[in-house]
Image (cartoon, rainbow, N blue to C red; front, side, top):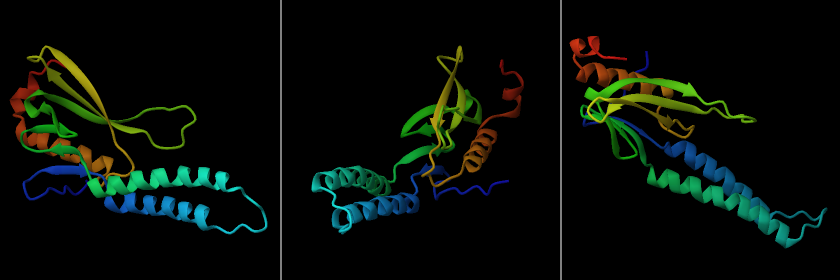
Length: 167
């Protein structure tokens, strides 16, 4: 089982990873510097083509540096409920289940893992499903997120409440 890492307030927090975002940003910055200062005397490349290469590499570099600097909280789990991007998604009383799913994207080579959260809304009359993307630049793994959901769910729901749930 995955070791659960809670912060000082007893919350489980999923944020952007500083290290991964900085490394990716540095790679794009190195590509930008190479395109700008690279001396390719064997092949003449007009400056406007180099300028296009510089734009292609500097924009992602800035994006990843900003993501590393901001380090936004994506998912927050605490005794109150399940928060996504700073908003309360559901209270634990209204929580049904969570699972990891992978969306099949045509011609994609990357993982498209999402956290599927099922919960009640509107006085427990309707069940809602929310898909939360789990990116590759986050500081917690998919298994750790599921373990934290299970921990807080079992901590805040009574066993008899689960027996009479109409799933």
